Image 1: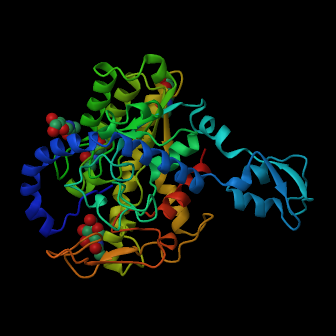
Image 2: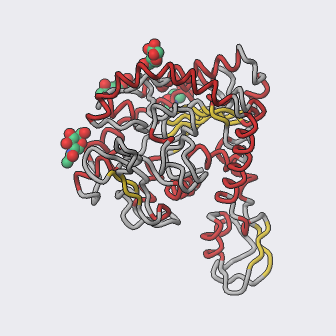
Length: 413
Ligand SMILES: *[C@@H]1O[C@H](CO)[C@@H](O)[C@H](O)[C@H]1NC(C)=O
Ligand SMILES: *[C@@H]1O[C@H](CO)[C@@H](O)[C@H](O)[C@H]1NC(C)=O
Ligand SMILES: *[C@@H]1O[C@H](CO)[C@@H](O)[C@H](O)[C@H]1NC(C)=O
Ligand SMILES: *[C@@H]1O[C@H](CO)[C@@H](O)[C@H](O)[C@H]1NC(C)=O
């Protein structure tokens, strides 16, 4: 998804940014490497917080049923449909006696549901929906308040108030959030969980800024494999990849056709040795606040959603053909479109009152979430409870939304 504002004001700054970009990246890489200890502490704290958010403690493999609970209430509480569908010894789901109940044991089977094996590493390629800190501080508002307010409590490069798709998917697989590529040297200890090459604002093709497009992201991966030799072939064989390109190509070129290039990219990632590759279908981009604003956040732009349907149709076909060419069906589709729609329709386990209305907005035209004026005065407004909003800013979901989307995605496996 989009990682950089496309307002005219920003457009004027582009050349300035471009000139600064390289210099700043150099400065950043040296400054950041000086704080190794701090980095380690941060990673560890974040992982603990993340676990508390994602893993629901009451739903261990054996669940203690209390008075008045039914299979339905427990299933809802644990986000685990298995409890209702697969407990053969219980005939009436509304009639459960206090005692013990077998749940699916959320973390342990899940990875194998999605990939039919349990990966030990996750590699991520994509944009702001998956970026966990790669995009440079100078380039991206994701490093400014109020981003990161819910998790980890201050901006850390995620385009949300907190966790994003990468965090939830990794947790689901029982892997810790992969380290951002940018931090591979300072945090080399953390490389064994995998690595994220995702950059907010990136596309299959080049987009607004000199951000690594997907080809470039895979080049980085190849370099890590061949030059830095961080991973062995057997590491790769027990790893999976997430590929998630959520619309920047479309925002820049409107109807440019990314599915063929994307298909080549998928093949390349698998060709490098990654055992399974999950690719997301595109979400309904016409429902992002930047489009729904024209309808007072009451409905989506269906023209834009029809582009998405076409894109997703081509991508599905391409993936089916790729899988048809190999024995082990290495490519898996994650239907982000259906998951978003499920949550929008309030069918998911979390309800959002008006899903198209963003939580954080600029106070007037020309300002957006995170804007400040020359004197550093903030020019944005944040809603009272980000946990009740689906969208955080003009195009990115809140942590609560990602959690809901993730639960809806899980129903697909
Ligand atoms: C990706 O970026 C590189 C470097 O800017 C460029 O040479 C290449 O053509 C781009 N690839 C695509 C598919 O746009
Ligand atoms: C996109 O590519 C597909 C597959 O090659 C082709 O069938 C389709 O017509 C193309 N669409 C556009 C808008 O170029
Ligand atoms: C809906 O999207 C299309 C394509 O981007 C655009 O041309 C049109 O103006 C949008 N409609 C509204 C009401 O903004
Ligand atoms: C898969 O390959 C077989 C044989 O080559 C072909 O008959 C079938 O239509 C293909 N299916 C898809 C989805 O491409």
